[in-house]
Length: 54
Image (cartoon, rainbow, N blue to C red; front, side, top):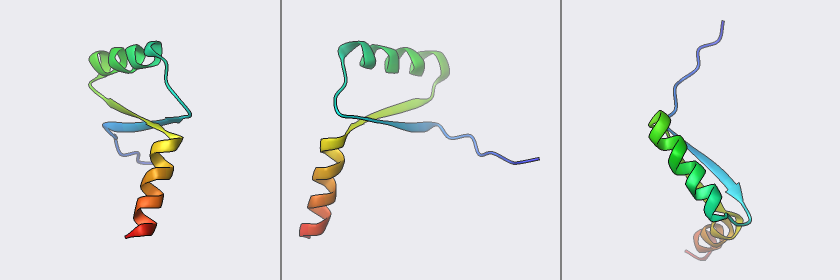
């Protein structure tokens, strides 16, 4: 039997998000109380580049 920690925040990664995607993320939060943080590939790459420049 495995023990799984309940995580309250998750991440979706995509190249871009439509308004419908944001609507679904909001609906999921209202239904479950769990947070989905939408990240774009560009945001991740910019953060990685910023880390390398420091």
